Image (cartoon, rainbow, N blue to C red; front, side, top):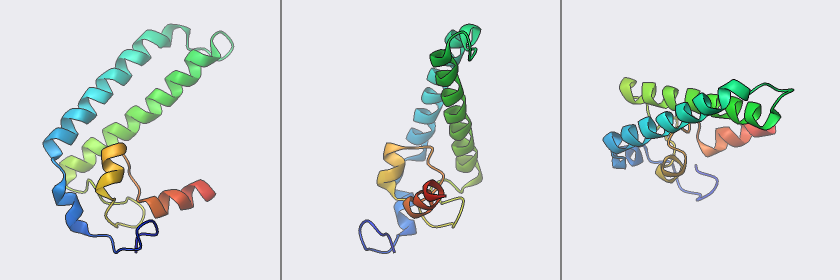
Length: 112
């Protein structure tokens, strides 16, 4: 059951996604991240420019998630929670295309 809607998760919602569009959007986001890292990297040292450092670290972490999502698309597991295997709601993937967990598992991760 989905705690937000009180309706069962429907694996068919994954079929509603246009994976080609998702893949293009992820590649575009990855390119933006690479540009940010290239620009900030020379000064992204904690004691010299802490803001550039944190932005770089966060961007690299996001890029890792994007690469993992692209791998899941290639493997045919995109749209499934990596923790419990349940379908990730299409609306969540539309907002965060590189989401790797369903809402319930993400809430559990954040509580830990």
